[in-house]
Each structure stands twice: as structure tokens, then as C-alpha cells.
Amino acid sequence: MSMLLTDALAPGTDGTGERARGAHPSGSVATRTAAVIVSDWPLLAARDRDDRAREVQERALREHDDASAGAAAPDPGPRPPVILFDRHRVIHADPAAREAGVTVGMRRRSAQAACPQARVLEADRDHESMLFELVAAAVDTVAAGVDVLRPGILLMSAAGPARHAGGEEVLAERIVDAVADLTGWDCSVGIADGPFAALLAARTGRVVRPGRSADYLAPHPIASLRHAPVGPGWGHRDQAAPAAREKRLDLAEVVDLFQRLGIATLGDLTALPAASVADRFGPDVALLHLLARGLEPAPPAAHRPDQPIEVVRALETPLVRTDQAAFAARPMAEELQMVLRDRGLICTRLRIVARTENGDEMERTWRHDGALSVADVVDRIRWQCDGWITSARLGRAATGAIVAIGLHPVQLMPAGEGAPALWGSAGEAAQRAARAFARAQGLAGEEAVLVPVTVGGRLLAEEVALLPWRTEKPARREGPWPGSLPRPVPATVFREPPLVALLDEAEEGVLVTARGLLSGRPARLVVPAPSRSPSAEALVHTPLVPASTYDVVSHGPPTVLDERWWGPTGHRAARLQLVLAAPASTPAPTPTTTGSGNGPGIAVVVLSRGGTWSVEGIYD
Image: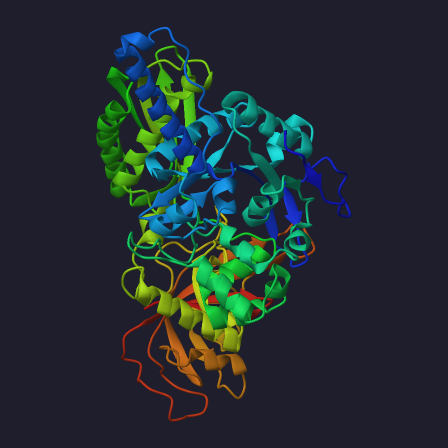
């Protein structure tokens, strides 16, 4: 069992680990996350595959040679070093091979010359994914809700499982023991605020107290950014998923650049202003700056349909081999893709559920960077089924043949969230636009680039909020909103409504009584000159001209808005819809006055607060 290290308690914590979210000085929060890492997983998976192949070969030779029948198997002796290659380059090497001089990135010929006695193996991502199901299933015996980030790394929320286990330290120990007992492999567990801190903490088996992730990350060398969760399974909320051949971010190049600039630690990086980092390096490096501060990127805005989306298939022939799973997976993946396309949605997290002939159910959740394609779903079904079918090989109870498979999207987003951006496909053009936005924010501040977001409310100005680019969208405040305008709403809405005067036939101001009645019939709407009311400048480029008077052609009934009447901040207002004629006369003729009363009507919405009228919106 791995030794667990625990940081000193932060103020306000009691050591039970029950706080689900860590507080930070900036006011942001990060989810309490547990990371499970099996070190050198591709190397372990390749060695397992090679050992099985050797066992099958040796068994066949012994059965074929009658003379060796019943003889004891020869002693294999010490295990030679192992080097793992991918496209003739070293991607992993065990300690013995590294001691002989083998390094990651070395060519095949050079690696074999440095360590000629090493076993040379080729990487197989399919086998790595299939075999890692054994580790995920072992963790499932301790805590549910495990997500496979990529083969070798699991992520999960730590709050609920820690409360059930009796503390975060106890949870980590149970996970380590379960993986060792059920698979025979060693793993390490880290718990911290946010995924980046949890991944680094898992490499030393550390539990970082809530609110201490920024302090824990600060002394780490800048090379630790190579472990940042910005690859497959992670993405930007404000960037579409990259194309298959597009490389989003080269962490090695970023680390090398920071080292040449004299940035030696994560603390040195976080000491730089976030706006300056975004301006100089762009949004990808700005995300690394956010992670280094112990925070986490905002998740995509999830969509929850009224009717759940799922594809469940009862198999006529139970699955007992991986090739059978591949044939069954494609029609299911195509059906799921068709359902999502018809509803205008994309899936970024998928739960795969299988039912065996014994009546047991097994499930696993997969993350993905961007929308899951048909090929992505087929691969995950195939990996998953192979892991379940072969799980009995390491001493676990046999699962039995799989008789039914279900696909259940966990995280859905509108298709527009992952569609190509306004500037074309999600490639260099989108990155140039993102850099331009980031530069504008770096020069003029965060408020320099604003995007509209629908949030809901009674008043027109409250229905849409303008938020800085790259900030998380707030949750929509669902109604009902008594007194809100029916659709369509005015095309022009004023953030600060300009003041006007609403008069009756006797040139008296129109008021709305406590019973919601008008004191007189509205006859004229007077728009003051900018010199008398600075807010009149907001009417520039609108049908309403300052220093003009408009005849009221018709009007609707007033709508009383009684907001927060139960508290001291409550106030009353009244809304009135008017149809105005073109200006008939002006208090003081100016060159801005146009029309003679015969022009088309102007539809407006006016708002009364404390006896003062203002223009809330103008219809096209």
C-alpha cells in the first residue's frame, strides 16, 4: 500500500475532508477531485500483452513436443529490461533500460544499441484501453462515478465517496488496496481542489487540504505543466474541438518557452497577471495559468432534454469475443448519432452499460474532448466489452456473456457549442480570432470584449446579460416572470433607459394608480433634448429623435410589476406599450426634428418608476 502524505490543515477545516469545494482568494472555486494513476501504464499493458503471447507460444510448444510432456517449465531467470516504441521512437522505458541510457524520444536503433538485451515492444492503444477496465472496475468497488480520463488515469469527485469512507485519507487507502488486491498492480491516489492539483498530488500519493492547492502547486517546477489536463478528455468552453489532424497545444514547447524566459516554477507563472498571459501567449496558455493557480476551467454548459436519450440493444447472440462487440457497436453508435443530430445535440460524456446473462450490470463513463463521433463510440464500446469479457483472467469472478448493451449520454450540449466558429473551421482562423479577443482584453481590460447571454427576468434589461469573453455562462433563471413581455420582444433594449415625459390631452403627466389604472389617456410622448437629459443620447440611431414630441396613436393596458414586495429592496413599476406617430411638433425646433405626422408608426415600451417614465425598448 502506498504511503499517503497530507498537507497541514487550512484554516476552517477539520481534517474530515467533507468540504466538496475549495475556497480560493480570488473567490473562485474548484471541485474536490480524486485522481488515480497507474504509473507507466502503456509499459505495463504492453508487457502484459507480450507475457500472454509468450505463455500461449510456450504452451503450444510443450504440447507439440511429446518429450517435454509433463516436464517442469524452465526457469525464466531475471526479467530483461523493457522498451516501448511507437513509430520507431521510445515512448516508455522501465528503470533498468533508463539506467542503461535509454531516454524517451530516442530512435529505435540508438535505444537498442544502448540496451541490446532489452525486450522491444510496440504500443497498442486498443489493448491499453481494454486492459485498463480492470483497474476501473477495482476502483468501482470502493467508489462509484469513476471517469476514465485516458488509459492509466481515472478521475472522480471526492466529496461523496470521502464522506462514505470516513475521510479522504481513508478513501485513498481503500482505492490503493482494492487495485492491488484485484489486479496485482500498484496505483497512487491524489486528492486536491481541481484536476491539475489532483493529478500532481497522485504522483506522490498526497491529499491536499481544501483551499491549499495553489500553495501546493507553487513550488512545482514549470515542467509539471506536461501533466496538465489539456489533452484528450479536456477542452476549452470557448473553443470548438480541434480537427483530427490538428494539434491544439504542444506542452513541451510551452515548457521550453517558459524556461527560456526564466519562469522556473508554477509559482513564477501564477505571479504574472492573467490578462498579460492571455495577451502574450493566447487562450491555451491562459488555461494553463488558470490551472497553475489551483482552479479549473469552467465546464461546458450542459443540456438536459425533457426526455432522456438512450440507445439500448438486446443482443440475439451473447457477446463472448471482442470482434462480436465491434459488429454490435456500429449500428448502436449510428443510431445514437442520428438521435442526437435530430435534436441538434452533441455528446461529450457517455456512459456504457452492459447486462450479462447472470443478471449483473456493469457500467463505465468515458470523457471526450469535443463531440463523440460514431468511430469514437464504437472504439469505447469495443474497449469496454473486451475489458469486461476478459476481467476474469486476473482472478475476478467471471462476468458471463453480455446479452444487452446500453448507451446513455451523460453530458449533452447544443450542436452550436461544438460547431465551426464564425471565422470558419476550428483551426487557425478560430485561434487568430481568440488571440485578437485576448489581446483586446489585455489592452483594455476584461470588459473590452462582451458577449450576450440570456439569463431571464421581468425587465428587458435583465433578460440578457453582457459577460466578458471566456467567462462561464450563468445558469438561466427560469420563470415564470409575472408581467414579462410576450414574444417577440423589442429589438432595441436600453441598459440605462432614457427618460421621457408621457402627457395626456390636458398636458398633464400620466400616472399609474395603485390599482393599476391610468390617470388619463396618453396623448403625447415628449423626448427631451440631450442638454436637459443626458440619457437622451442613447436614442441616437433609433427612430426616436431627441427634442421631439410624438403623438400617441394607440396604447395597451398598463402592467404593474411588483418586485420583491416581501423585502426592503422591493419596488413597484408599470409597463406600457405605445404606438407613436412621426413627430408632429417640437418644444424648440431643431435640425434633428423630422417628419410631419404622416410617417409610419413607432412601437415602443415605456416604464414608469416613481412617477417618472423612461423608454425600455423599441420595436423594429
